[in-house]
Length: 110
Length: 114
Image 1: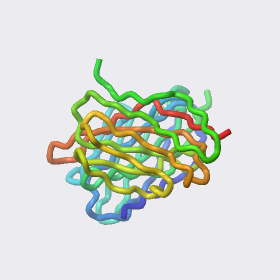
Image 2 (image 1 turned 180 degrees about the vertical axis):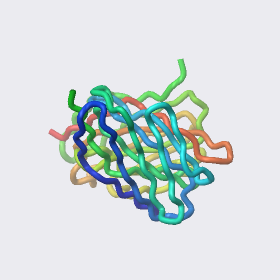
Image 3 (image 1 turned 60 degrees about the vertical axis):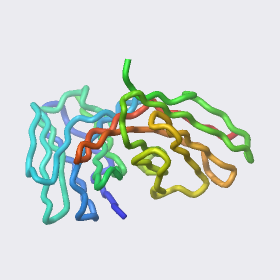
Image 4 (image 1 turned 120 degrees about the vertical axis):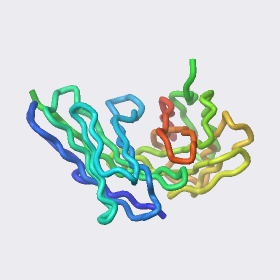
């Protein structure tokens, strides 16, 4: 079955710096890679996703890259702000089976 | 108002008791999921269902059971066989249009064994 590994588990940056979170997956049949943000006490919410036929996708300060050959994908946040502080989860999905990584706690200090 | 609703928000269970967590969605989604969230371990898949009357085990199904009698509902039963049930449980749903799509989460149920 699918296994998703996520690194780092914690990430501390200064406001304005960039943050990068990396994930690897094991099942070559996976074709959908979403990223979720979970603020304290709240439900996870989608921030960006990418499909296997695309190598990169951007949405304002957030970008995701996908390397199908190496089976890894990354989340890039530029110009970080204190409100970006949260836990971020990557995930990989094949036919409707959605498997998550272990999460990265991002702390952005003013 | 469309969405996915979990109830109750907090649940206390005595050791040896079974307990059922509710998950209802009015988004007309085909797929539904149950995840368990523990600190530092992310979201671990318990069960998922792609269509009515069918479901598959996830990575940590032991001690849990589910049913999918209606498209809108996917209840999770935590049985007495689950040795460490205290956790935060999240239900999610998504649709299928020939490709995987965004999963929407409920607000979660925090289960505590007392």
